[in-house]
Length: 373
Image (cartoon, rainbow, N blue to C red; front, side):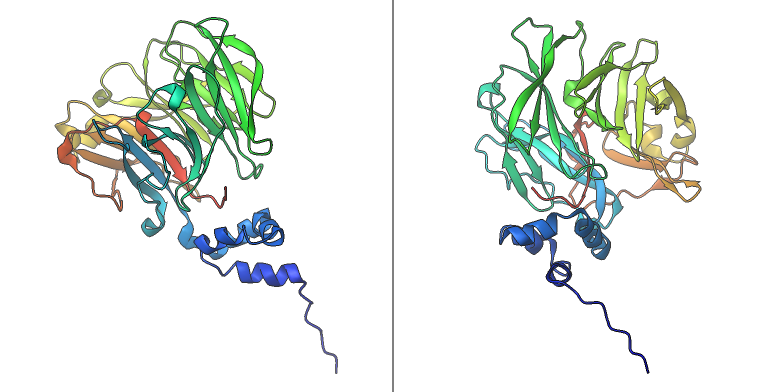
């Protein structure tokens, strides 16, 4: 009779099996116990196994931020789009200790850049944080007069490390900008290249979008820029050759999306997508809001609306992409292929009586990736 022996487990396997069973909050604390545990928990394979074993932590959605008069912190809402509602982060940044209050500046794949709220640039502090674990880390001072925008570049599928890109003023002139990059490996900021010039038009450096390994910015005119933090190259990218106002600019599911407003969005609009080789934009969807309004009184009576978030989602061969819009007093979501309406789940109290108006510039997409600071 032949007996097969069970494979031996080494110490790493045994400890990894134990750590996989811990709640996320306890697991994060275990990173500080010793170098061995920190190495095990930081391993990409361990992170993948933990995510598969603990689907209760999987959540994606978006933060909605609004600034209220005399409030120390910005007003936050969180709307889940996929995953479990009870896994959603609490819509509060109060765990960051800053006596000037805190607001969100940028988001990327589960990480947030936050900053001091009610203060001048000379007193402003910046933080990298993960709201689901309430971890945060203050960044070194930028040593510049003006920060026009600060963005995270982080793709967990390519690298376990993030980088932070800041667009600062330059000593050369008011039209020059200097890029500075922060790396957690070095723990410091460094200038990237020489100062570059921007024309006399409003570039939305405060609304950087990370896609295809690069950060992207659009403006109110025909200029659009992209910057790769690995190669440290700044390049231009094409924009539709028309006078317009950005109605939405964002990324979802590996797609860079743009909506241009030539007039009131209530008349309908195109959702455009950038080609992977940056050769130009094409119309991904055309929305006829007359058809949507027939099914929704809030849209039918609205004299204005704003696009908050677009989710590009395919389940097998079925297009399940949807859009979230804001009309006075109400948030509405519907699928792009057939205009069928969807319930917006949230664990927040949404007070529609405040008369607040939200737009895509106050939206910060969030996916709870398995990352520790």
